[in-house]
Structure formats: C-alpha cells, structure tokens
Image 1 (cartoon, rainbow, N blue to C red):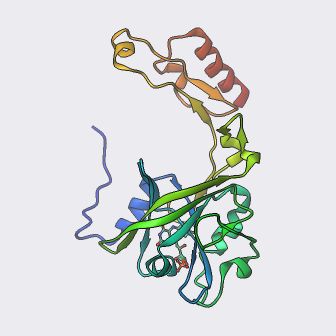
Image 2: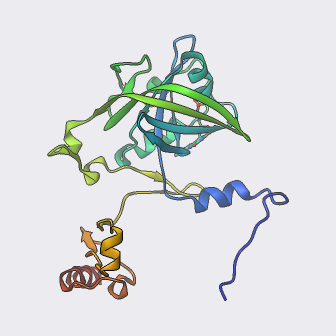
Length: 239
Ligand SMILES: Cc1cc2nc3c(=O)[nH]c(=O)nc-3n(C[C@H](O)[C@H](O)[C@H](O)COP(=O)(O)O)c2cc1C
C-alpha cells in the first residue's frame, strides 16, 4: 500500500508550503495596475487562472493586502502580461515590496506600452497582454480573489505563427514550491478521445515534440508503431 505523507491543515501551519509545492506548475500573471494617485504597479501572481471563456474571465488571488488588489479596487482595471523565461529576474524583482509611490517599471527598468482599452500600461518586453476590467472582487479566507473580464488581447507577432501561438516562442516561466520555478520542458501532443473512439479502443498516438525524457512512456498505452518509434527514439537520444 502507498505510504502517504499527511497533513491536517486545521492543526498544521505548513499548509501554504505544501499546497504551493503540490499545485504546480502554476502560470504567472505579471499584473500591471495603476494606483488612485497614478503610480503604475507591476507584480507577479501565480494564483492565476481562466475561469470563463464566454465572456472571457481570468482570476488572480492576492494573499494579504497588496497594492495590486488596492489598485484594482480603486480603478477596476488591470493588465495581465505574459511572463517569459528570459525575463525571470525582472519578474522576480517586481515582487520586491517597494513603497507605494515607487513604480516597478522604473525600479526594475521595464518599458511601458500603452494599453488599448484600459489605463494600466502593458509591459513592452512581455509577449502578451490581457487587458481586463474587474467584474468581481471576493474575499476568500486570506485571499482577495480578483475576477477580470478580458476586454482586449494583444500578442507579440513573434510568438504567433499561422494564427497559432507557438509555445516554444511564448516560453512561459512557471512557479513551483518554495523558490523554485520551471520552464515548459517537454511538449507532448495527444488528441482528445471521444466516447466512440474509446469504445473502439482507439489509442491516439503520443507525439513528443522536441527532446525529452519520457520516463516509462515506452510501456504506456500507445499502440501505433510510429508513436513507439518516436518514444524510443527520444529515449535513445537522451542516453
Ligand atoms: C513568481 C511569483 C509569484 C507570486 N504569486 C503571488 C500570488 O499569486 N499571490 C500573492 O499574493 N503574491 C504572490 N507573489 C508575491 C507578490 O508578487 C509580492 O508580494 C508583491 O510584492 C506584491 O506586489 P504588490 O503589493 O505591488 O501587489 C508572487 C511572487 C513571485 C515572485
């Protein structure tokens, strides 16, 4: 039987570390806001997700009282900028607790780019911007959950090819537990299986894109020779 490390959050204070180490990797929203006094603020938030696609709504959650939440309350606007690996140091520096009258744009040396529909600027160096108008702000435990309708999307043409986002060009960096971060690593293509295909026992091929270490995959439910070739080839390449 599997031995489990267990924790009862009601009596153990280590739950933040454990949850953030388990719920990984988390995408990073690099959130631009503007204070009531007109100071542009920028901070990374890894408690970030899509919650609706029609209308398009994203959420971020700030733990404790932060400038980001204060500014969204004041202006109802924010911009989620993409967080690429090449800017990992800058992203990290924007998490420094600067005084409220200091803008991270100047403090970290980033360039403002005017947004189309909202006041807070985009980060010019970032590959995408989701311009958002907040629809709801909810207190949940010690979190302030900010929901924002995406009213405009701008993506750097360099990361788009044939109308599709190329993940290797977007190169998002993600948050793990503690002070660990991660990059995208191995990319796998696996089509969805509908019910009829499942009944017919159709196993779509697992396609590895690029090099990697597909541990144990050679034995997984892949029944096409070509997919097996791809897996075995990738394993061989790594040795
Ligand atoms: C990669 C990364 C992700 C973070 N994610 C969050 C988060 O999801 N929620 C949060 O409250 N703080 C998060 N932080 C910490 C905030 O960025 C930090 O407290 C920052 O100073 C908040 O800035 P603000 O007060 O200008 O909003 C994160 C920090 C880093 C480096």
